[in-house]
Image (cartoon, one colour):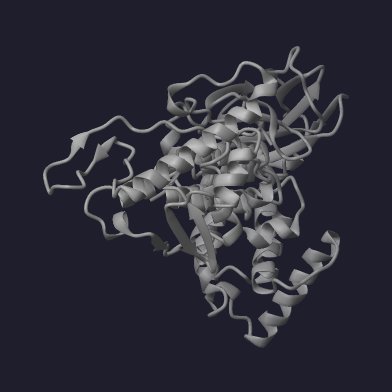
Length: 499
């Protein structure tokens, strides 16, 4: 898909034929010319030029002198590829690797930085007729090596997405920059639930940071919006740790849902052979961990030998926004996955925060220092299924805020309601309150790629009771439903109530 072409000057400085009918004849002449040049060089003891145009004199041990590099052609019709690469006509070097043999030509191989370096200077391989390649990368297989070597003889290469990682690994070893670029382009176009993890790992290994960043953003957007057991099986501990620690994780609906997702992910990591419908996964995970709890006499699972590996991931849970909701706190207590030593300081912290909101009438944050709040914000989300008015609240005490979020006429508004005091204590009746917030609207296509993204960045919101404020307007944007509304909130600065 989207083959990348690389055309080089016509052999011996001539022009490519202008008449389509003459192309085949001229390619055959070109092929014979290359074969003849190679054979003539071997008969007269001459050396093959390196890509830098350096030639060592055959009759003396003197210094190297400059010689223009011989021009060669890449093939678009297939005749040169068939004759020179597949049949090996006029070959002057044999490449052996992975149980296969290729009879090739130094003048073509020198397009590769790997071979150009090998054939230049005083390397032992520069004078050898047969070279055994050492393949240090397990991602490289015979088919990928064949296609990468063949790309040196072809005008274009077609790569299937299912083969892009082995070919990228091979191209990286052989230093084939054009082939690496083509692999990157294919990866950009085909990131989806089946490919994202393999692309993420390989992009990090083979120097494609923009592909790695693209895959990570895809995971942030889709991990909790797309229910896929296969995806959760493929996500390693280090990637999950980074995802759960990110404030940009698209959470649906509140922080307890991140915990629930991690519980299912941990179960699949421990029981990778489990297969069943998605609706049965959580129940199965709960049964498995409940049985483990009984067998371990109530020892928190993260303190067991099996569970310790997952500690760095669960450490990134924002427990402060779980324990402030009674049903969520009960789930945490009943599961007994998380040690009490983690929870006790969180309960203390939240109790002090509640007292501050209730008794000191602290209005909330006044400034936003983004680096200081990224790991402390409450992550919330909601899915707007269709173009019709809707409104919702996020559960939890929220320190005196009864915030109603509304979507109507392509606008998102916040409204602070103090009419019903059942959601909090007296702090809900304060006339003025402040919060720091960030709102992000995301629309994804069927493959999980971003169609629309609007980000308000962090700002301070100042609302009185029953006051309403528009925080996003889609206007004439091309929207694909569902729309995911992701929010980060900071109600009280942590440093204001910590000891």
